[in-house]
Amino acid sequence: MDRVERRERILEVAGELLLAWGYRRVTIDEIARRAKVGKGTVYLHWKTKDALFLAVVLETQFRSHQRHLARMRADPLEILPSRMLRGHFCDFLDEPVLRAVYTDDADVLGRLNDTAKKEFTELIVEGDRMVLGHLEVLRRHGLVRDDLDVHHQRYALMAMATGFFTGEALLVGRAPAAPEVRADILARTVRSALETSPGQGAAAAAAPEVIALYEQFGELTAREIRRQVRD
Image (cartoon, rainbow, N blue to C red; front, side, top):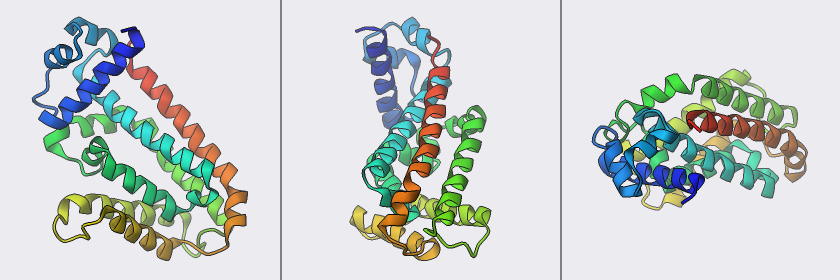
């Protein structure tokens, strides 16, 4: 394996063990053994266990972000909040690490979420700005309502997402069984609360500016991923 392949293999094994055993029980020794590298090799890439697992989380979030960018590039209507959150919700359902992060699963993550909030403060702030900028673009193009302060609108959007995401853990057995039905309910809720109906043309006009915001955030995330790696 070359250096990049070795790093990817270590990340893959670390993610598998994080989900299977939880942060507290996983050791660097076990990650190295299963990745078929020396313990020192792991530390060549990440200086601490926290840095390695933060990289697992960040890489997972980055892949979801890139999938969302691809959806927006393929269809301008994907810039609408209802479509955006439906896509994120489906990614969340398909990706166990995302589920652990968004539901703050202490059994899996241990202290990792608290560490991430400290390590990624700048990225979190920029993410909030990105969402705010996204809504401002949509408002200018008449794609969402403007009878609510944009900061309150962002709060409403994030609160709806949080409710549906955490509901996956809290409402087991009381929610519709089919994942696509739950995703559709989330999309309809967001659409009813925030969106107007101006059509495909307005979405196509707004899409380049929205996509640029997400591309910029993706570059910031990629830079943070590189910062976490020692080499």
